[in-house]
Amino acid sequence: MEWLRRIVHDPRTERFIMVLIVFNAITLGLETSKTVMAQWGSVLHAIDMIVITVFVLELAARIAVHRLAFFRDGWNIFDFLVVAITLVPTSSTDAFTVLRALRVLRLLRLITVVPSLRRVVGGLIAALPGMGSIVLLIGLIYYVSAVMAVNLFGEDFPALFGTLPASLFTLFTIMTLEGWVDGVVKPIMEKFPYAWLFFIPFIIGTTFTILNLFIGIIVNAMQSEVAKDQAAERAAEREIVQDETAPLLEEIRSLRADVAHLRREIAAGSTPRPK
Picture (cartoon, rainbow, N blue to C red):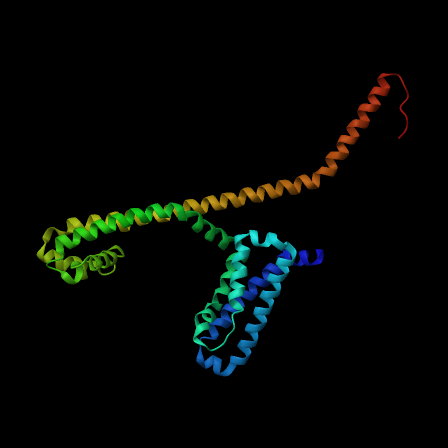
């Protein structure tokens, strides 16, 4: 089992899986072309089966090495689910159409293989609690503004602000800055010249202020993830140094003990016994 452990933890194995995932991404893209499938369909299916086999064997080897500890890591569970979806039967029935389409999710294994991608995803996940508060704040401002817009402009512009759902959708397009001047604000300002007093603060408060808070929270979370990884790397380096220097320190202690013993014998006036 030790030989299997060495293979699983070998950096070359990780690089091989990474290359295989990228290669599989190319083949899955080629499978979307009818022209390519007409000429090379059998070859691409054979390659797909080989890739699936390698993924299953690699996952089985990791489970055999780590046993139950394998399922204590969230990234390992993610890999397990992705490979499990890959094994869904490729029948032509509608029941498996969506699941067969999810085979492309196997490319997401690249996240678990590349440490930098894993840090990015870890930062995004760590930012979710803080992002929840921002979502609540922007939702509150968004809803209040939609109700105000219905009361202010709904009667004269029913297509844009006639109902609450229509007002919410219109304000969403304004928040994305997609055609908000010509499509929304200019027509309204022809009838309500001071309508900009409503729309400009809304854009500043949502698009330029609150949405930027998302970026700040995500950046802060990613910095925390990088700091954790660096701390873990430093701790691992210290353990390696301690393991390497432990025999040397033990030998130094033994030499000091011998020197102290010789000094005591000399001080007592006795002849040191040869070692």
